[in-house]
Image 1 (spheres, rainbow, N blue to C red):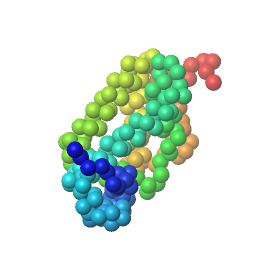
Image 2 (image 1 turned 120 degrees about the vertical axis):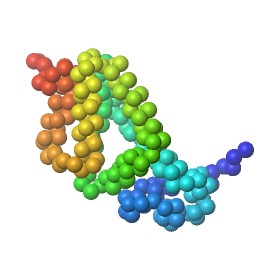
Image 3 (image 1 turned 180 degrees about the horizontal axis):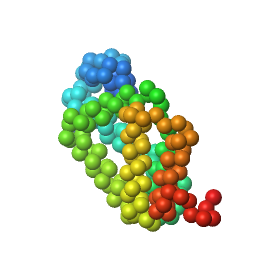
Image 4 (image 1 turned 135 degrees about the vertical axis):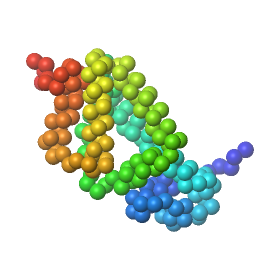
Length: 189
């Protein structure tokens, strides 16, 4: 029978994010120091740096899915899930210089097929659900790809959109998803 946890996993994973964002590299010693626990405590649940990153990836996926599901719950109808993701993007504007942990996760994903697999499975399930619930599946697919591309550019700080341009892009994406066109239908508010 496994021993019960005597430490807060969120505290350790928060420390992983801070260490990666600050140092650009991950060591178990740095995580332990940042979390205020012993190295043995960190290694009790996570036998390696790869396990630590894997736990952080799983937590990131779960948090993103929960955030988007909460936003989608505000909508009804065939396009609720995609509209929720667009609404969630509106609520989480980019933070200049605030994406160091995201950049580190992307770097980890590029280096590890297992970690990419976790994201791939999540993206495949998400895409399938979005398309199954779409009133215009082909337009919804393009809208989803555009939304993910916008977020990717933001997180990697590849392009800086003004707030007005970002709002316009998100509106175009929503129009595309709902109508199959970037121009709103006549009579829409």
